[in-house]
Image (cartoon, rainbow, N blue to C red; front, side, top):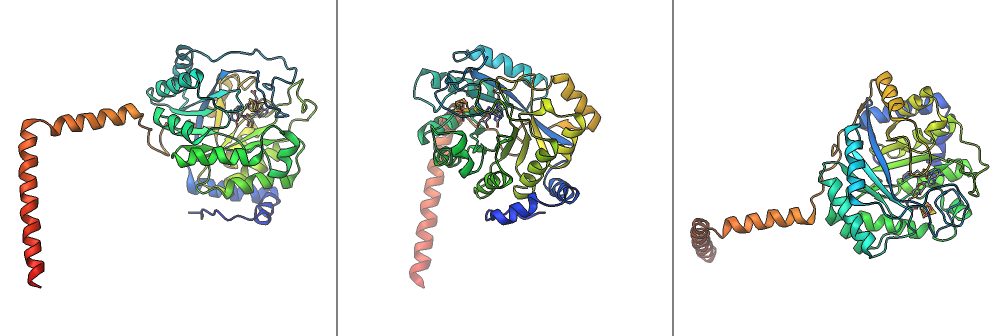
Length: 371
Ligand code: SAM
Ligand code: DTB
Ligand code: SF4
């Protein structure tokens, strides 16, 4: 078993990232096999529950209100629509549903109340529920936990240095604080970033450095290839080459051995062989469905064909962590226990037990006083 380290240095990570390609993927594939079933890939399904009109200035994002992009803005979806989409995703092999909202941060309003209902609904369908709603306060993280959330996605996106080139409306520390709030509530953290925004290799290493020093490591690490969307400041960026994607995935796999490394946005630019190489190098999760949040993703049938070719099966829900209990289900357990112990026969038992305990205490005190 490979060691789990939380004190990686940038130099150590860069040395891994720069290894000769064949050595790098061999080492990553070895770490992968030691920690995961190499023939299993987790399938997540994205639902954009609230699309567009966001106040932030993330340079990559088609949903920022200030950029003129061709997306259909929407208010919050209804609970019925979301549960129906989750049912379809489950039937297609997804074990996790990720609910995404184009918000800077969560507000304590009726929209959030409705999101909590969605979380409860999807959790009760025995699927892992992930949300990505922007920044969260501690109290909001607690409410999500009580509703049955499994994971929270909040990406660092890049290194601390390059981040400032891409986003000015909130800082790296804000992102780390939200991650901390989720961790404090025992919510699995999903955090990664994007490559292909014009960052250097050192920036990619810098992002993995910050992620790998979180303790615990994020349970999932999405690696997105930038989807350059017309109208955004990054519209002219060339899609990253498959070699860079594999290098990034392999390095993430080696420094965070137990994490699920998710081959996220950008798969429409990749061949089947390219994606197979990503799985070989340690990717073990994808987003399935023909749309990410607003941009295209491979068709469901194409993904199933690829899984068949590679003999890959979708991972079941809750293999890496228990299904969260909602606050109601805690309450139900407590109430059933209370009802049981207030029944007359249990009252007698409880009284007898109390008397016997008192006798024991008297005996022990006497023995002690003889010494
Ligand atoms: N508004 C929330 C937030 O920013 O935290 C959640 C949704 S946001 C769209 C989630 C993530 O999607 C971003 O952090 C970014 O990593 C990724 N993303 C957005 N646009 C992208 C693009 N054009 N290409 C690749 N990844 C993108
Ligand atoms: C993540 O890291 N990638 C997903 C998910 N988390 C929310 C989003 C990708 C979005 C790509 C651009 C779009 O479709 O709008
Ligand atoms: Fe808003 Fe999130 Fe897009 Fe940034 S990435 S503009 S916060 S939706």
